[in-house]
Image (cartoon, rainbow, N blue to C red; front, side):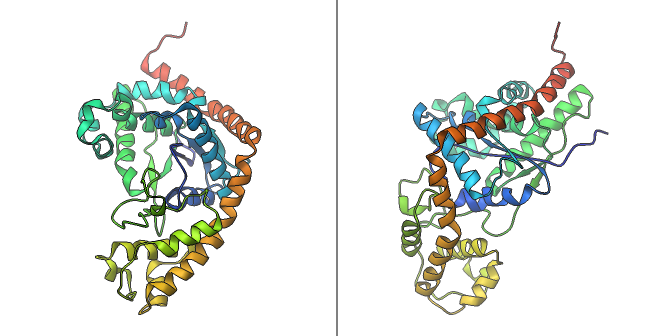
Length: 336
């Protein structure tokens, strides 16, 4: 039995502004993993081009995501930070996994159906096989753990299926069984305008989200304008099942203050949203303000960011290249 290191891989698409959802649902949690695991964090620009990206915008967005990671506490001395396209093992292993994965598996992927909508015949092939590339991202490093939100569980299950089938097909114990890492409050942050929809970079309403490029005043303004209802706050989160916007704000407060949502409810029980949103605005500015300011500073240091990504890619390649070579040998590719 092969002994695998406790290695974490995760990534963020450079397809628009990072939001509070990216921070609470992913990046903040990565920071705590740096001291307990070997950590690899990737700006997944190959994934981004499954839909059209303007080239200069993509380059800027790639730097922006890297800046957001570092400003949030990802330390380039502790973690590998790089952009996916610099390490060819991702694309090469993805092709091998295209030949391992089954059409039926991909046909069940709900995210493709959601993104392609009614016009799936016009969607790119890349969008369809996106989950195979995601599996390659993880398994190119023989990662053992992946932090995931609810919307990525299905893709992680596919990664496990691909790893198991590869191992079975070739009679090896090569790829590990990847485990999900699921964190606490507000792992899924919803829109500030519609509590039933995920906070999204693509939402046309700027007031639906807090961007990590927003300044302190704008963060506070968006929280104050967030949709709520006229009912007072209840004693527990269970009483908010039919009040999506209220539940979302409670969860955001809980995550930003490192508390359980029920404790927040108990503190504000019977109060209206005016007082609650004032406190949430102050808390949001206190937590996010230093991050947005440091991110803005880093974005002006393009040479520094490019250096971090270049060094990270070199270190990532050192890990992935020997693994990919072993895959070649297992599959039977000739290397004269």
